Length: 82
Image 1: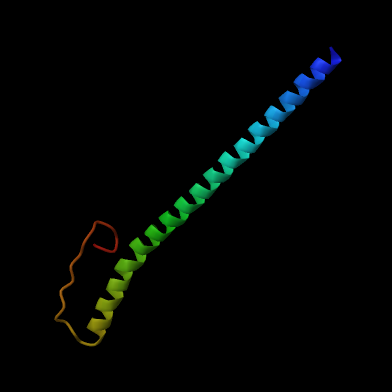
Image 2 (image 1 turned 180 degrees about the vertical axis):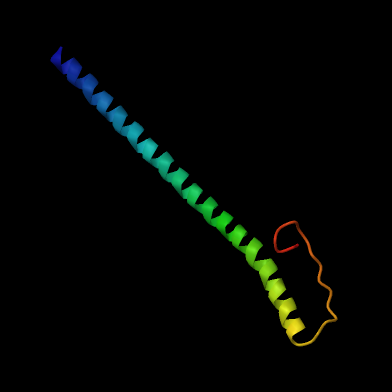
């Protein structure tokens, strides 16, 4: 009877260890995917801000050189486009 209980306890412990290892793997994968998604979003947001500002800088440099022949096209509905 004691041996049966010990065997059941041992199997339960092994199953718990397997479940724990699977959970660690799933959590690790989720963290990796979340980190990659956060980096991708950060790059997208950075480009969405720096690209219009770079265009404005180029226009300002042309104006500083007294080149007023260029056309400025405002695109979008954010602060930079207004």
